[in-house]
Image (cartoon, rainbow, N blue to C red):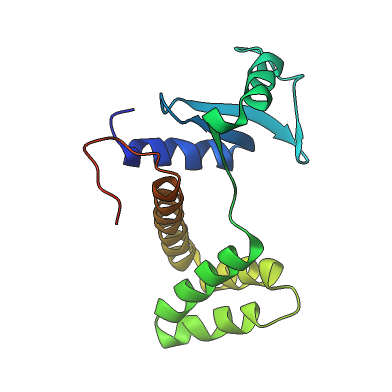
Length: 151
C-alpha cells in the first residue's frame, strides 16, 4: 500500500466480495477472510490458512481493526443524500422509494427504472461516499500513513 486511499480502495473491494476485513494496526496489512452468511468460511482456503489467521486476530484483538460494513441507517442516509442531489425529475421517484416500508429494496428498483445513466451515477457516488466514510473511521482509529493528515 502506498497511501491511505489505496488501502481504502482495497478494503471496499474486499468487502464488496463478501470478505471480513481486518487491518493490522502497526503494519497496516489488510487481512480478508471469506464470509458466508456472517460466518467465517474456512472451507475456502486456497491461498492462506484462514483459520490460523483468524485465531491470531482473536488472540490479539487490540492489534487489529475490523472494518465494519455500513449500517442500514448509514446506507439509507447515503441513498437519501444521492437522491437529494439529483435533478428534480430524478430525485422524486428515488425519495419516494426511500419513504416506503422497504427502502433498501425499493431504491434499487427505482434506480433501474430511471435508466443506466443514473444507476452509474449512483455507483460512482456510493463508492466515493464509502471511501470517505472508511477514511473517517480509519482516522478515528489512528490508522493512517505518517505523511497523511486526517480531517
